[in-house]
Image 1: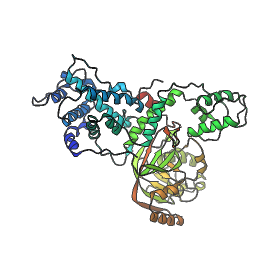
Image 2 (image 1 turned 45 degrees about the horizontal axis):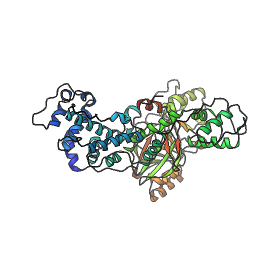
Image 3 (image 1 turned 120 degrees about the horizontal axis):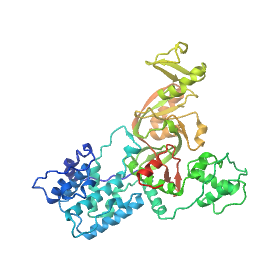
Image 4 (image 1 turned 180 degrees about the vertical axis):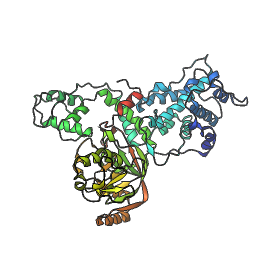
Amino acid sequence: MFKKHACYLSICLLVAPLVATADALPVEPLPVTTPAPVDLAPVQQALAQLPSVCPGLAPQVDAAAQLRLQAFYQQQGNVPLWSADERRQALQSQLLMLADDGLDPTHYSLPAPDATANVLCSDIASSQHYLQALQDLHYGRLQQSRFEPLWHSQPPTRDPNVEVLAFAATGLQDMAQAFDQARPSADLYRSLRNAYSTVRLQPLPHWDPVAGGPLLRPGMEDPRVPELARRLVSGGYLTQAPGGKQYRDELVKAVKAFQLSHSLQADGVIGAGTVAELNISPLVRREQLRINLERFRWLAQDLEPEGVLVNVAAAQLSVYQSGIPVWQTRLQVGRAERQTPLLKSRITRLTLNPTWTIPPTIMREDKLPAIRLNPEYLRQQNLQVLDAEGHPLAPEQIDWARPGNILLRQEAGPRNPLGKIVMRFPNPYSVYLHDTPSQPLFTKGPRAFSSGCVRVEQPLLLRDLLVSPAERTRTDELLATGVTHEFRLATPVPVLLSYWTVEVNREGGLVYAPDIYGRDLVLMKAMGTVL
């Protein structure tokens, strides 16, 4: 799913003493004075005393960047690196190409040649922009933890400084190769970059909004039909607008194509969801490509060649083998007020014929109010009342206004919300992948219906891809008993729950997903989009 870049042992040994403490240092301007041993090379002396030697540059270099620069120059023999015009021009060319990655080349502008300028400061400034560009291209310009935090069951072990310095060393010999190595290799990223590189150079199309109103079904007549037709022509879904106010034939076909490419229920019925997607402006549509390139830079750090990848926004699951998606299915994910968390973990066990112990939030906000309104609710839903140790309690003995520390559990069976199987993985949110009896909801779009867990449309087919043939046979036998069993996988499978709102499909077309959690505009503003 992404290519690994080798790190030479010599680079690791050289960099380790300088970068080991970088993460623990605050990101702040350097102090006004930093003593420098007199035996340091000139470039290292300048870096140690940056506020006094290069006062114009110092505010741009925080403590972590200073350590990275020190390591970079030490790696290269502590000599100036940018005196050759050919190398500077090669770097400048690659920096300009960052526009195709959705990054602003002006953030990495090299200092202009100036005979009166401090040559050493100019060299350090060029190195700073070089290293920052490689860092942002590989890991993202924004910190994912500030915007869309991803929980890890096992903390990442790679050292970003080591990787960036490895890219940088390559670039001094072959600049294009260094930037290509830093750029995520995952097809999700590369295909979207190709699309964005074309779209960003084209004039923005124009379309007028489509008015809201009652549901518009095929065959109906509606005064909004002409404006709907014009919108679909502007978006490339129709070659020309049909006359009249009748919603039929080619127009219905175009609406279905639009719905399909925007992860909506492709039934041709125009409701509030379809109107909302139709009315997203051309600028926002273009910027969605840009911010999702940033998301894919984040994502690339956690992708593995084997495993399960969930796009929460699109409510879609993919299984990867040898870096290639081999199977996909639809999901139901958490609604906006109970969002599915983003996380990376490993599927370690399956619960077969599961019972359902109701999570605290659902019990507090859903089940207890229903029980107070309807004394028969427990019986109707086949719910058992338990104490904190799992011992049965008589419902009539509970003060449902103040029930205390109790549990509600639903036995295995066809009405159980978890269906026949649950895929479990360590996480602090008590979420998992599971079967569901709510099968008709898979035809909808968007599919944000759950309380945070992820419902899988074809869970047994997913099971087949997670286990060995022997494990499949054994789990089939256990499922047939109707009794609850916990089955531990011989080989845990990576699972990554992430969030993105546009990608390129196998046919090369853009497929959008509704921004169900309202995250796109926040990222656009952080990336500098003027809306």
